[in-house]
Amino acid sequence: MTSSQGFLGFWETTGSAKTFTHPLDPALLDAYVPRSARVLDYGCGYGRLTAELAGLGYGAVCGVDVSAALIARGEREHPELELLRCPGFPLPFEDGAFDAALLFAVLTCVPRDADQTAIVGELGRVVRPGGVLYLSDVPLQGDALNRERYARFAERYGTYGVFETPDGGVFRHHPPERLRGLVREAGFSVLKERAGSVATLDGRTAERLQLIARREPAASAPSPGPASG
View 1 (cartoon, rainbow, N blue to C red):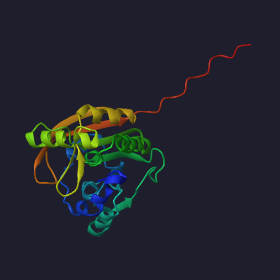
View 2: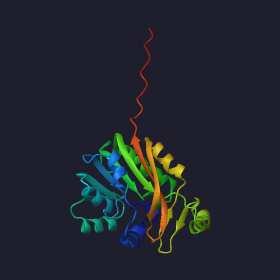
View 3: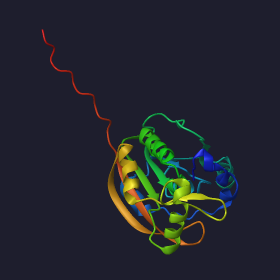
View 4: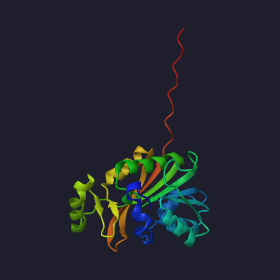
């Protein structure tokens, strides 16, 4: 998980003890990311999916998260993994250092537009041209509980879809087009979408949206015209 600095306290305390439930779709991943790929698990939390990737045979996997408590937990539970605490940007990786990146249930923990844009943009930097972003997150839900809390917290946060939970967390659900737009703005083209249901941290069920997107080559500068003489 990750969060903007203003909401990080939850992930250093209550949130760091949560059992994360947002599942990987191994078949979808396998269709686009070979086992030889260098994979970044951004917002890895305590390394749950990082460990799953390693178990599936991905041999070059790194997890990063902003939360010191979650990374410390990951180091205890998965000492064999490469897990790094990275509280800000730029990440300590060269441009194009990875063949693929995962962004799983991360944006739902980041309520502010600018912070979301920064995260996806940084992944656009560290994923090589032709590489893959696998994003899975929670779109706006249509049930009565969620519609009520979206409305209740919309004025406080200035965004419909942001809400608080009783244990102190602040989360955000998104119009699907926002998720697609963030990916496009960071230089990725969506190749595949898949919807489904997932368990949430509070034991409920939510719809999710998965996106597989390809990093486009950077636009080349126009060639200079012929010199005049």
